[in-house]
Amino acid sequence: MFSGAGCASLGFQMAGFRIAAALEINPHRCAVYEKNLRLRPIQMDVRKVSAREILKNAGLRKGSKFCVVGCPPCQSFSKLSDTRMVDTKNDPRSGFVSRFANLVVGMMPMAIVFENVSWMVRGPGRKFFDEYLGILRGAGYYTIHNIINASDMGVPQNRKRVVAVSVRKKFLNADMVRQLGQFHQAASGRKKTVRDAIHDLRPLQSGERDDDDPLHFTRSHTERVLEMITHVPKDGGSRKSMPERLWLDCHKRLANGGAGTSYGRMWWDRPSPTMTRRCTSPACGRFIHPEQDRGITLREAARLQTIPDTFDFGGDTTEEIQEMIGDGVPVDMAAHMGMRLMQILTS
Image 1 (cartoon, rainbow, N blue to C red):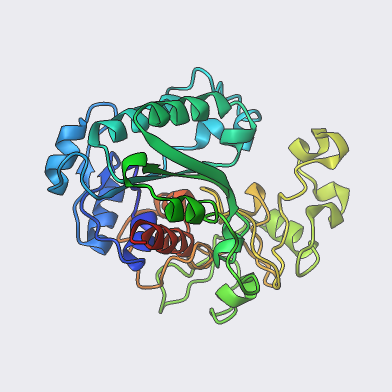
Image 2: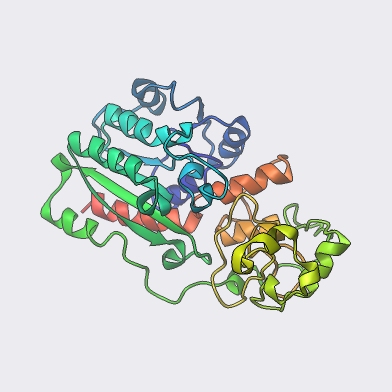
C-alpha cells in the first residue's frame, strides 16, 4: 500500500515474497510499477478503497497467510515540516496512518510491515504512531518497532526510518517472538559507501549527458552556482568554505550560518546523506559529487537507493523521477527486511 514506483515491492520480491496486489493513487507511479513488477496497482485513493476490494484484487481471503507492507506519505512527519510550516496535527496526510491501520485490520493479514520517517516517533507524529499501534493491538497483533538506518542494512546511504513489524498473535510462538526481538539488528560486514555505489559511472561536467545511460545526466548549473560549487572542498566539503560573497541571502539570515549541508559535497568513503525528492539539486542538501563540480545525477541517486540499473522509469520528467527515487524505500533495505520476515514467518 502507498506502493509508489515499486522499490519496496521489488525488495520484498527479491526476498522471496510474491506480490499479490499494490495500491497507489499516482498514475505515473502505477505505470512505472507495472513496467517493472509486471503487476498493475489498484489506482485509487486509500481513503476511498475498501479492504474487501483489495483482497478481491489480490485473490486473497481475509485472515489468511499474507503480509501487508505500508509506507504512508511522510511529509507531514518529516524533520523539515517545521521549517516548511506544516501543521502535522491538521495536515490531511497525517490521517493516512490510521486509515492504513483500519484497512489492514479489515484484511487481517498474518504480518504487517510499516515504514516511515524516524521523526514519526520522535516528533509531533508520535500521536499518530501511538494511535496506529493501538488499533493493531486491539485487533490482536503483537508489534515491535525501532529506528533503522539503511546504512546498517547494506545500503550506501544514511537514511533513518522507523520500522514496525506486527504479527497476529494467533500465529506467534516463543521462537518467533525471540526472532522478532532481533529484527532490527544491523547486518554484519562493513558499511557500503558512495564510492562502492557510483565510482564506475562516467565522469560528467555541468549540463553533460551520458548517451549510454538515460538517467546519467547533470543539471546545467548557472555560472554563479558553478562558482559556488568550485569553492566547496573535494570529498565532504561544506558551503561554509565558500567566500561569504557567494552565500545566498537565505543562508546569511540563518543563525550561525545554518543549513550547513546545503551546497555540501558527499564523501567518497562514507554512506551518502538521505536521498530526498530534491536530491539532484545542490541547494537542497549535501548533493554535490565528491570530486566533480556538479550535483549528482538521477542514476547516482538511484544507485544510492540501491535501485537496479535495469529499473525502467519510463518517459517521466526529471522532477517526477527524482521524486520517485527520493520517496522510495531503498531496495536492498526492503530485501533485507523481507528476508528476515520470511525467516520468522516460516520458522
